[in-house]
Length: 336
Figure 1 (cartoon, rainbow, N blue to C red):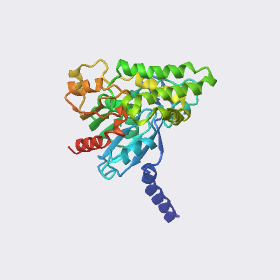
Figure 2: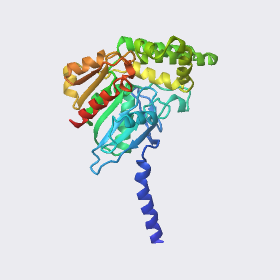
Figure 3: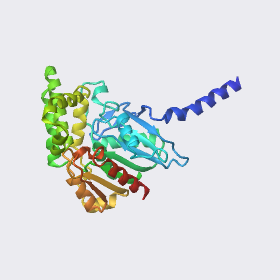
Figure 4: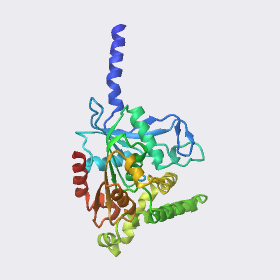
């Protein structure tokens, strides 16, 4: 009997790390009673994540990847790892599913009719609890994110300034410009207009998908890559995205970005004293999706490293025109 118990204990303790740190598999953690920035408490709030690489004995080589708008950890991890932005042979990489993305706590998986407002700050707080309480990691080597992921990185700098050595915000913003708010509110308005008209929803989602695609690249890039004769087929292909996303999840994350403001009422001097991480800010100068002005000012005022990508691919330049330059920039910054 004793030998059987020892065998069971051995198997359980050996298997736990394999389950907990399952390479690349979708995992979930319960944040139990999670309090949002609005004061609303979510019972058994869940957050999704995937892990890659091995955590070292001192638990000091962890990296957090924050997801972009509507991004889920499967696609985000593929882009970061296959794209070479994170080194899984050196780091233990945690790719978090942001609140509202359909995997973590979101309108599409929330059981009550009224979904509370979530913020970028809530996303970051949930990732902090995942890292500290579920993964038992007390410090991160760096936090990195693209687009809305970059917005989360800016929030990480001010919400948990001592928690990471480096922060890498790529085509994100510390707060939205008027241009950004105009874009995101236009998309939100299209979805809100169809809220009480079920038959109108497919057309509204298709309109949103087209607005979104319109801003991903520069006008000259689209004109060069897609001829007038190819337009109908191009639109037919691109709007397929509209059939996949939950309009409720989409709207929830839109609202999170619209309200995002990592600067708050702080002065530049207060931010200088608050932020402890070594910071790299990467912007795309021709970005029509996330205006680079606020991020450039943030980096300039606080004397952080700033890289301006000038490719003609707009917001998508990190994945296309300037992909190799971005990779080199990030690798050099992490090594430094």
